Every structure is written in structure tokens, then in C-alpha cells.
View 1: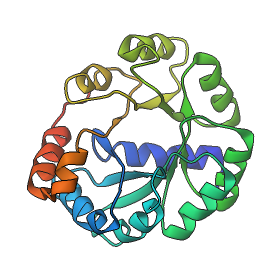
View 2: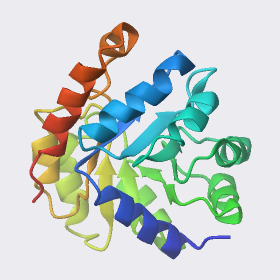
View 3: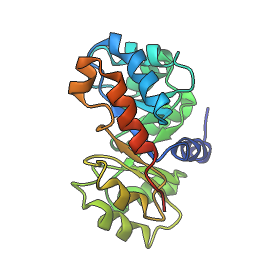
Length: 215
């Protein structure tokens, strides 16, 4: 079991490890370990593997064995997703939104969750339950950094990880906000570089992201 307060405390620790959490889509499990090694070597140790492909759970198993990496499962939607993620070795979870069933499942499984919210009402509902660290998603489609700044004014007790449309250029706008701990982004592991096995290029992208300043 884990309480929402404990989950948020752990999520904050993870978010403070680097300014960017890579949001990873794995299409070939053979790419999982070398991709994780490149990202960790570049300075991004916290890795979110999205459950959007058939081999995602296998990828979590492989990445969980990479030294220095902290691997979690993204796109958690159902209680079964939570059970599968824990069985694969995920040590945290990320969801695009939040339902009571999903929150219950994560708390019962002892899986720290970074739950998604896109509006003030959604953020308030999660705060009421005890989640003080949340994912702002989809960030750009929901108004970007100005919207998150606006939400932060009346809800200063919530910290966010904006994800969705975040890139190397606009990440700075988010990271400068006092209510942002880090950002989630997929640009550090682009599909073409992964398919080509260009791990050196991915390590370089990770290093650029790891050097981004935080406010």
C-alpha cells in the first residue's frame, strides 16, 4: 500500500533527478536496454516507458536491469495496466488522467503515481485526494506554459510535470515556472534515431536536455 501523500513525495524525488523525463515508445524490445543506457549516460536517469506497443512490458523488464536507471510505466489507464507494470518491474507510474479505480489500484499495489490533470478542477480533485505532484497533460494543447502559470496562481501547493508537445525550445518556458518540477518529452529518443540504433545521438540529445536550466 502507498498513500497519495507518499506517492507524491516519491514522484517529487524522481522529478528532481533531472529536468526532463524521457517519454519512450518502444517498438522493438532489442532497443530497450541500449536506449536506456544512452539516456542514463546522457544524464536522464528517470525513464517513462509508455504502454502503447505490444512489447512495452518486455521493454520495462529489460530497462529495469540498466544500472543507474529508474524505470516507470506510462499511459496507465486500467487497474490491469497497473498490475502488469508492477509485474514487469516498473517502480513508478504515469497516467494521462485519473479515475478512482486507477488511483485505488496504484495505491493498493504500492506504485507511486504521477496522475494527469488538464484543468483546475481535475488538479483540485487530485489535490483533495492527497496528490500534490501531478502531470499536466496534454500541456501544449491545454494552453502551454501560460495556462500552467495561471493554474499555479490559485493552487501553489501543486507541483507539475508538463508533458505533451514539450520540446527542447519550449521546455525552458515550463521549467522557469515555480510550480514545475520537470517536463516529460519524447524528443530525446526520436523514432528514427532509435530505429537506426544511433545511441550516440540519443546520448547527445539527453545531455542537451539534462543541461536545461530550472527556475
